[in-house]
Length: 218
Image (cartoon, rainbow, N blue to C red):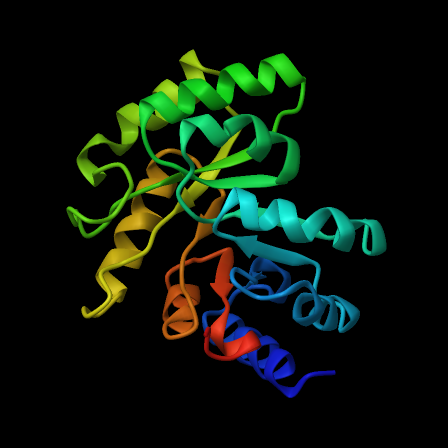
């Protein structure tokens, strides 16, 4: 087994135990965006089954073939989703982590009803309120989550965030966990290669790790 994958798994386990949480409380989402099918296959052979992709088209090119070999693999969409790609996304992915605006939420609800395929969803919160980042502002989170769940009947199971790149992530992770608790949402997707151990301390149930498993992207 690849020493990189084992190292990440060991670090997740250590951080989880240090946070006094059950080992199974945190799942690893291996971020395979931009990586060719052969590299992903290696990690699948090593036993990893949960992956994250950023783009619908890229995932469409890789995952049908990989899924034929590894039918128990699960793929999350962790990048921005355009409304004109909703039909493909609902057909292809297992979880949508980036529900970030009412128009997208409505499009997803319509397509899930049309196709009778209901995917678990996470609402993306723009915890740093950064202009260049997608996501719902923290102050509007409760209202948006209620819209998704109550009016649109979307299967919202949790929240995700990407904190500001050059700031201490802990306050942002704490904010996301607080919003999740307030809305009785069990899943919290936060933490990447550089900060997943901190995210686990603040209650992450899924960490999205790419570089530490696959190496630097070209």
